[in-house]
Image (cartoon, rainbow over all chains, first blue to last red; front, top):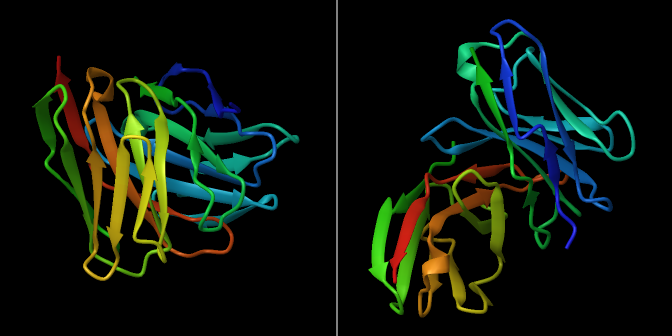
Length: 115
Length: 114
């Protein structure tokens, strides 16, 4: 069964450094998402992406964050200047449509640790 | 803002028991509701998706119901097995034609004892 893949599985970065998290969504999917989960807390929506542009973003997704689909297969999340509070699991998801009958499929996540 | 609550936070049952996990949400204007399973250190596996117009969905030993007007959903697991041990999350989405933003609950951690 097709799956969403994320790399790396674990990223350790010094505070203030830039980090790029990578995702390969399921190939025929059109909608892409990033979520994060701080240890012990809820999964939180960050951003959705459709037709090569951001369709919705949460208040968490400030100017430090950006997303890009640089080619036909990858979907990336960049954090420009990381802070300690950015430490979390980051999940990428994709769906075939944004409509009601298509579930979102999640990757295994990237654990981001900021030192 | 949509708030999603899951009760109980943790549940431990002997193998073979039937069990019910509860999810409640504050804003009934949802588009759909999805139940996920999360294993330690892993991503989320989709279990069932219920559209707002539906009352329930079934997959194998799992049955999810939705009562939109009262803001509740339940996930029923029949004949539980040790392999069912995981955290179960429910998430509700609101209608957007450019992608659905999900609001997640904090999850129910299930342990099935052999």
